[in-house]
Image 1 (cartoon, rainbow, N blue to C red):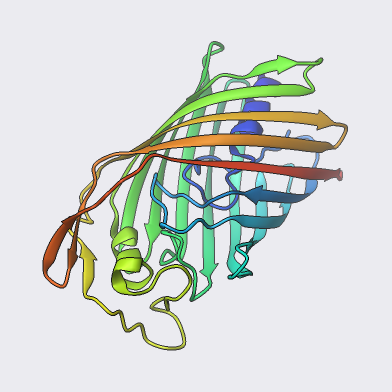
Image 2: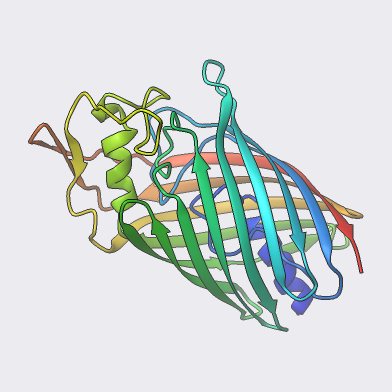
Amino acid sequence: MKHTLLTIIFAIFSLAGSAQSSRKVPYDSISNKKSELRIGLRYTSDYYFMGRSDSAAAPYLTPSLAYYHKSGFFIRSSLSYLTNKDQGRIDMIAFTGGYDYYGEKFALGASLTEYLFSDESYVVQAEMSTYINAYAGYDFDAFMLFADASLGVSDGTDLFVGLDISRMFFLLRNKLTILPSFTMNLGSQKYYDQYYQYRSPQSGFGKGSGKGKNGQQPPQPTYDVYLTESDKFQILDYEAGLQVTYRLHNVRFFVSGTWMFPVNPGTIIVNDIPQPETLQNGFYWSTGVRVSLKGQ
C-alpha cells in the first residue's frame, strides 16, 4: 500500500512544480530507501493560480533540478521560460526546500518556496514572493484524500486551504498509471489585489508591459485599480484533473489536463468606478519527462 501512496503523490503533483493551483504536495516523492537526484523538463500551456489567470496565456517551458535525501528532506529549483513568440524570457525562478514523510497509508510534509518573478511577468501570482505549505494525506484504498494549508506572502499574507480526492488506476504491469482527481481551493486574495494594481490590463500594464512593485522603476499605472474584500476567506475554485504517467526504468513521462471552475468573483474598483469581475472556466495541459539518478 505504501508503493501505491508514493505513486499517487508523484502522479498528482508531477505537474505542480511551477505553482499551479494543484500545489498541495511536493510534486514528487521518495521511497525513503535511497537518495535521488532528479532532473526534469516540463511544458505547460498556461499559468493558473486558484482558478485565476491573466487574459493573455503564459505558456512555460520549465527545467528543474531536485535532490531528495532518503531521510525525507529535499531541495528543488526550477526556471520557467515564457515561450510566447513576442515575449520570450525567463519569467520565474523558484527555490523550494522541505520535508516529506510517508507511512504505509499516511503522508505528511511541509515546504517553503521562494519565487523570483520577472518585473514584466503578468501571471496572477507574480507579486507573491514566498509560499509556505503543510499537507497531510491518507490512503482509504478506494481513494486518496489530501488536505493542505498554505501561506502566500506578497504585500500582505494570504491563507489557503485545499482538499483533493483522487483514485489511481494501474495498467501495463504498473508501468502506466491513470489518475483522475478533484480539488477544491479556499483562500484570501491579497496577492490578487497586488496583481490588479501592478500587473493587470486594467491598470494599464499586463501582457508583459507592467513593472512589478519590486522592479527597478516604480510602477506608474494608468488607472487606480484594486480588488475589494481581498482579505475575505472563501472558496476560490474547483478543479478536475486527469494525468497519465508512463514509467520506463528510471525515466517517467507524463501528460495531464486540468479544468478550472473559479467561483466567487470579486469587485474591481477602477478610478473609483466599481466593475464586477468576470470569471471564466479555464483549462491547461502539461507534458514532461523526469529522470531519477539514485544514490545510496
